[in-house]
Amino acid sequence: MDFLLEPPAGVGPLRIGMPRHDADAALDSLRDPSAPSASDRPGQHVFRPSGLMVSVHSMQGVLQAVEFARPLDTTDRVLFHDLDVFALPAREVVAGMREHTRIEADPEEPAFVAPDLLLSFWRPFEADDDPDDEQGHYFARVLLARPGYYDTPAEAEERLRRNS
Image 1 (cartoon, rainbow, N blue to C red):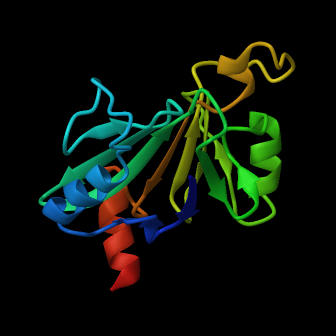
Image 2: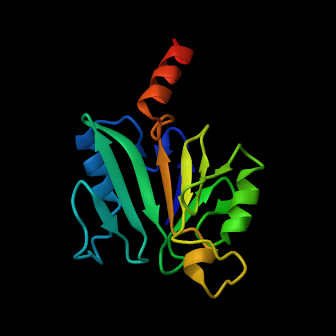
């Protein structure tokens, strides 16, 4: 199954800002009934047969973010435009993202954030040069959230002021 990242709207049936009850039902619809995972947690995350984890983050009764963890095989893909964010090396994902939007390295984490969308790409450590070291060569997680998801209180206040 292909999951098309459509920031800031959402991905597939999971739409940012939807009521939590609807988000829980949408998450449940992504479960493969022929191969349920004992690791699934309703309202939190599901694991697809490929190993792809789909997780939802809600606050104040609405969906705030959707997170994916890298699958073990290619039967499930997470795409942004034409970029398969888990199949391509992290360096190529970042270069491809730059064709669509601003993307910045996180100074404290082995991650990159496209703040205008909001998409965040993470890996446990950087090891760009060795494809055999999958944990560092490829991104392990991608998060799609509402813009401002990572804002500090001061940044949130500034965002509200700009949007007023």
